[in-house]
Image (cartoon, rainbow over all chains, first blue to last red):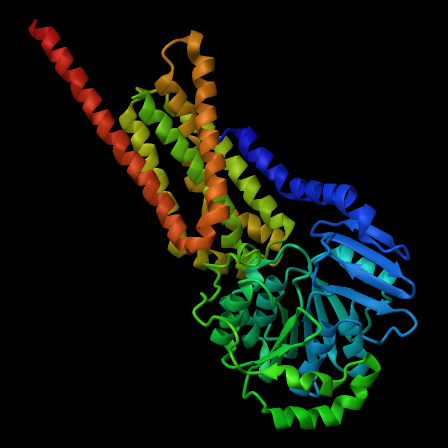
Length: 313
Length: 209
């Protein structure tokens, strides 16, 4: 029997409490110590969905979605060499091209600074690229600071990824390559990590299509997420890097190519990836199909998906 | 008897907020977790509670009893439980017809949550009526009831978001909420039965004397 105040205050509290906490953290704890002397924050924004920070260190611009310093995902761009990818996870995502060397339709979930779509648009100017982003503010920042621009073949769709996936399926669309890179900030959208969502994603792939997912390498979520991908795609390539806390999953809607085939594909497309600083041979030793996780961890489903709680454990 | 009414009000508060919190999870696979999905859910809950307050107050005018109070809980349970199996087909139906996820989520939230929440909104005014014996103490009684039910809401929110979703599947939690309402209904009906029998016996004795 909550009276009105009770529910109403909860309603108001959801967005504002989160923002207030972030704001407090930012001003009281982080700002005075966070940046080395030569870095400065050139853009700060609290959007509907996250805190967006752009900082500049010399020639390098970085986009962050959190004030936390242990923050995993950020997009950085060296303005003197804008094509060069700075973070290993972005390069690892590009390795999906070893499994699908000539994609004609590409879906990217999570725009970030636009690094991945821009690189793919350069590599495959004829391919249709849809980048789905929930937060309009992220698109504006990508355009303003990271030189992202839509064109005839590369579009941003401002929508929840799950809604886009269901709508695209209903409309009979299919993609050759789907990149899942939606987990940028402190909050994980739990409905994008479930078996049902991955089943919908797999259905959205063409025969032999590939999904590349930037996922969690630390915390208990690693075990749960790995088992969820196994449940939908069977064996997949687990790509890890010694110099990164990220893990990229490469899975196929078809037969998984063996390492010899990947090495051959690497020789074929390696030169075109070089301008992005993606050196295939550096990463191939990090490919594995072995389960290095707890295989008894529960599969995440629409019914059971406490991803945010698990990521803290 | 007051203890039972407070316990029922507490449970009502607990179930409402637990259900509201789960609402976001129910809708997310079809309408996403954008801010307007939460907007839809909160709107629907506020409107339903508002109507429930009105109906509950009205109902309390006609021979209020613990038995009727218990029936409110049973009806709430019966209207809540179908979420377990009908949420999915209802959302598919709306998803196929409404393109805009704002109106889709508003429609889905209405269809799924209005009925049980209106009924649960009736608990509040009805329990005030059952407890108030004089105008003098009415404010204090209402204050105490809001305290107890809002504590239930706080605990329902906390328990669901911190622990239930980590331990149980969503349908298990929804079933537990319906069972909690049924249990409280049974307690109210039993107590209502006993107290009316007491009254009848006392009345009988009085006439014998």
